[in-house]
Amino acid sequence: MQKYALETPRGTVYIEGPCPGDYLAKLTMNEKLTNFRPPAKQKNALIMITEMPAGMIYIARHEKEIAGYVTFHPSDECSRWIKHPRVLELGGIEISADWRKMKLAENLLKVSFQNLELENYIVITMEMCWHWDTRNTKLDIWAYQRVLTNLFGSVGMQRTPTDDPDIIEHPANVLMARIGKNVSKSDIELFESMKFQRIYNNAINFL
Image (tube, rainbow, N blue to C red; front, side, top):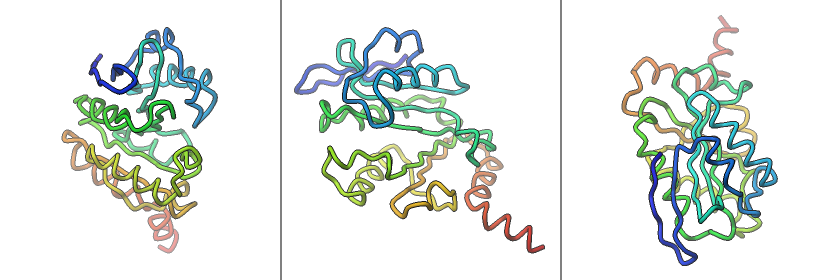
């Protein structure tokens, strides 16, 4: 497990991962980690991810409390990306409002992408605006989108066009991807062909 000490105005925060489930079970969640679900339920969700194939959790820990986290896991069964053997989803990144503006998110991504295992995958993130904490950050969705694209861009992820229904549901939604160094040409070509399934299916139907 990687471990990096980050000094902040509120004390030392440790960026750690990939964290096993039994380690996460011994920690508490900051009470303001509520972006996806209540803290206790989100902690259980993090533990479940560690049990998935290629599932990984990186955390920002202060003493025995999780102040933030980033998740990596296979795509949802209903998603088109589940059909690609080398796609891994960066499913969520969340920092408690108590720890904002202390570079926890940047360091979580920096440390997690030092894991050479990610070079074997096309890591995607599907950023949907209904998950964004615009109320506490006081950013509108377009400013929040810029913050996220810059954040993920810092580790080599790039905006990727697609007709994925979850992305095109709102113009602010974004698909970003990073292709690992060890991903084969055939897997890259498969990923490219999957980005616009609607066009592909229409062409097949026309023929």
